[in-house]
Image: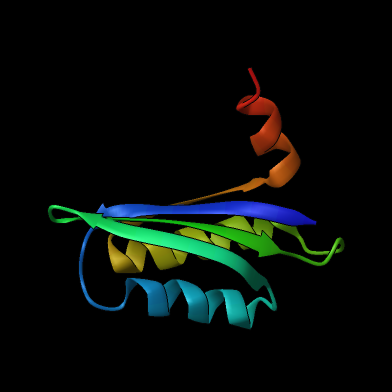
Length: 88
């Protein structure tokens, strides 16, 4: 299963490392990533590959904890839901 992860917040050292470390602990593969800094704001979008048996709600909760610790907002959605929401 694929998922889309977004991270938004004030830029500071360690955001990419913190998110990547948690994904590694959860055995979630990063397939693609893009990130940018607009003035003092950090934005990142990742395409993730997750095992079909992955507990999506547990993953969401764990990433939320990381976001709180880093002072950023982390959102994750199933790719199919993401695509359905953004179709014209």
